[in-house]
Length: 347
Image (cartoon, rainbow, N blue to C red; front, top):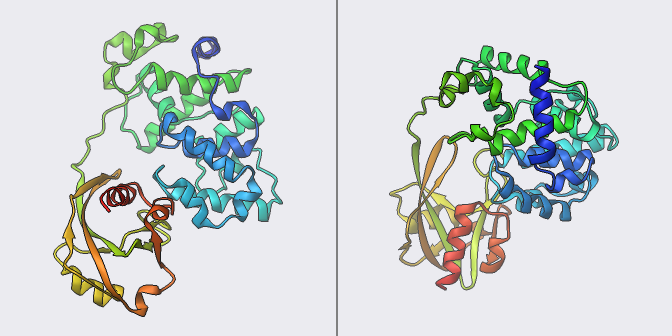
């Protein structure tokens, strides 16, 4: 066990990542932000969002005092928007209930909205030098292969085995280096497909490699075919303006601005008059597009509609007329941004 952590620490010092933006600081706010953004999102995608977010919200207090809509606007395109909502809630909790003092212990960090055990441990390790075990997706894969841990990912007994291993492997010293090494090994060497076992610093003791069954760990999940949901989106144009509508606070794209929607097969002109309070000309069907979520695929059928008359119901607070250029920057989901961009090119 001790040899595993020793070799991993030595490898990380030479081959691991050292220049990531959040590695330049031990500020718990910055480290927490990076850990939340890195949940289910690759490093290369996160970096520009991380830097832009810090430019606007350089500290916890400014994040807590900002409107949620502004937080979501900066998060737009990064996906998994509940992370942004929880980030804002957690900032408010720390500022209002703890007078801005960031929790130092893992158990206290776990009380923050959106912070699970592994994220809390990572913040405690990198910000405060705590001796805590992490178990993110990369760490799970490394440990499952190295020790040939059998079981179904997500099963409580399986997870308990991995947590027990993760804790038993913790070194007495250099815990931040070891933790970063575990993450880096899973990212660069012990990858999901085509792992680079020849370059692995702990290959000599890897049980799965000795058995010749690295690909069998972790046990592959049987994925159900992704469901497809279909929806019509309306690009309602009034001169150089387009109508955006606020999404409900929870659920898909919760709190973001989006285009008005209607069920497939509904008459667009009748829907606009009855539900949106405006009269439109003959709708023009645009090229459909698909957007993949974790558990389903959204089939979007867009329609361009020229508004000829606006009634009072269109002007309610959750609906706003934006200039086309401003609409893209209003905090809209990725597929809506694509539709707006295409509309600008063809207008």
